[in-house]
Length: 386
Ligand SMILES: [Zn+2]
Image (cartoon, rainbow, N blue to C red; front, side, top):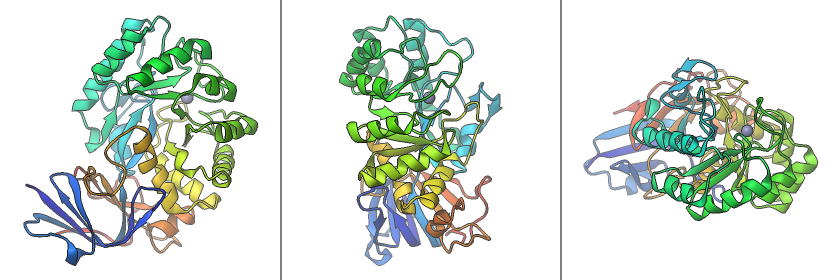
């Protein structure tokens, strides 16, 4: 049995937006899962092999990138870069959700081809963790000719998600809605592009089209990269209960306006955070942290709430047993602090001030995968392994 103790935690973010800050200064991990949370003296520390002294820093669940256009391996043909996923782990991301392997050169557009790509990506990423990060790969792109039995086969073979509707040849709600029903009946989570046309071959998607199609997630409500009109944002927030995704590679003004509307409508639990990279905008290793800072520094959203949007909210939508610090959940954690030179005194006040926090350590399943981030600034307080 492997036992890991995190002690001297100053601030503990739960990932649960209904109760974002937990009491306690220690976490006990057993065999990769969270076993106990509380005051160090109250935990069953007998037999602990590794102790991490968090030195008064902040511990959060590992971040999710809810919108990542992976293909296969840690390579993006879109920007011809390798190691982009590992680089994002250095920005605190421990789970990546594929929004569709759309950048595969020569991507097949027939039913057999689109299915084969999704199944291959799902199975490949199930065995491959770039930099230690977990990738939910294989997000089927809807193409003409797919039938109900195809979705049953996809689900049986490990495909959990439908990539952004609008990327493939299925574009109209009348064609998409039946497929969405088949996918949901198989337990799959469905994403739908919203806003302007992203690249040649994809399409412009309005709120009315999203409402008629009825996905689980409105992808990039702030645009990918071109946003829908604010009237459409209003409809999606007030007339649906869908998850609302805010991405880095979108419209920063609409991100703030949509977040303010969600605050007003008591809908913060529906916001999830993604990068929408690699895209034409580039590869953004710190994109998820930057959206957290953007929302928490420019709206009344609290930093701990913004962190919950990028953790527990996304995990809930995708039915994954992580993203919250609670007993029995996978021990994917980030230790963060205020970066050197920031006006912030700790990670949360740095975020509120708009500064990207320092990632001091990243753990996946209780194992350290990053002990010094190569991408964020260095932390003021440094955790130590004992
Ligand atoms: Zn999109």
